[in-house]
Image (tube, rainbow, N blue to C red; front, side, top):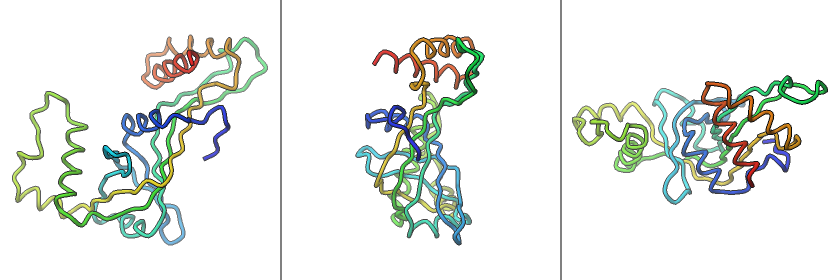
Length: 203
């Protein structure tokens, strides 16, 4: 990933937080020499050494990717930045965004208990805290049948790159103008980018 120095995330804690908070990722590999992508949730383990997920079994990517270095892209908040917000008309539009790229090797989950544990962790992460749903309450025979339709994986993390493009290449005055405009927007991404920009200014 092209990452100018002032946009690079150097704090590992920040990259892990982005992975956890924006865990619906895009996983890239090669299929017959062509790029292939699947959109799927990937869960970071407690030791921060693996990402866990699963493919639909008919998806050919799980077969191809086990012998490759794959790329998982975690998309954080992003939004358009209008030059009309600046103090000058000598400017062009741009985009502010946060993203993390994880490179690693795919390991197929052959152990049913490890697959069930990863699915259980995923349900706990995404279900509301007051939800009555629990994977442990699902009929075991039904669950076993459903599990035959998926292929569990874990990705051994080899390298992580993080990028926060938050107008750091502009003056403090201009950054404050952008924050002011974004805070007036009602959409979530604009609000999140404004918050991140304010936090970055305090560093």
